[in-house]
Amino acid sequence: MLPRRYLPPIPALMALEAVDRLGTASEAAKELSLTQGAISRALQGLEEQLGVPLLIRERQRLRLTPAGRDYVAEVRKALHLLASASITLRANPTGGSLNLAILPAFGMHWLAPRLARFAQSHPEVTINLSTRLRPFDFQGSTFDAAIHYGRQDWPGVNYLKLMDEEVLAVAAPGFPRLEQATDLLAHPLLQLESRTGDWGRWLAHHGASGLRPPGMLFDQFATLTQGAIHGMGAALIPTFLIERELAEGRLIPIFGPPVRALGSYYLVWPENRPDRAPLRSFRDWLAAEVAAQTTCPA
Image (cartoon, rainbow, N blue to C red; front, side, top):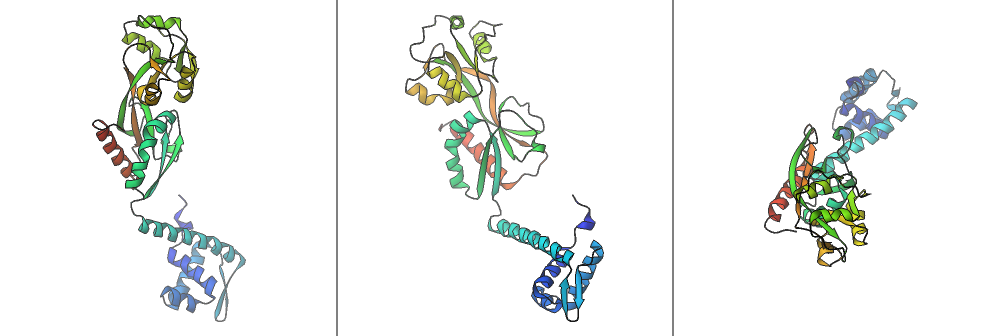
């Protein structure tokens, strides 16, 4: 924040702008519904506050100094911005933009199909989406909220739980039949680089603990899924991401039912920021979506 001595009163700035445009204090007074004396006092106070002469007084007219002309050009821009912000607020008191950081797979498969419903019910809110794969510092960003996968381990945020996750062991059709879970160790495995422990947890769930098998690494579920579809190996993929691939037979389950994953999906937002209307609208809508999906999945 700039020192207050560099922030003149808005009436004085409006008086200066009007004098520059109209040429006399009397005309400026008429436009601003003030007395000529009030205009003169405002201009004098402005010059004293800034410590710079702004006006050349010539008989009945006022003319800005070169420095005054440069200054009033910036003042005019600032007044215009303030007026525009007020007009926007009055026209759309509950609206605005929401900057949301998303996880690419979750954003594409779970959130995106639902956003049309949010847009219909909240046309006053514009959502801007950007991908972030890991937690970040809200203080150093322009994001209002983010989608987080994992546990409630993101410091300094509030949480709204969206869904748990189940993963399914899948492969392309023709993958050899497995008699037991450990038979999988004889085949190529695919895994997400941020979840290299998933196969170990899956094997432990099936009674083979203490194993952490290696596998080909992928940075996103989209490429991991394509790798499995093209026969590169077996993959553990969240069920909500591969509903179509399973229905169309491009991927098949290879052993057992879905297994509960370690993490869940959350909407998170910083604890120490004012609760803006666009975020409240989006959060309340998401909470309703989450409640509805238990009885009517999207």
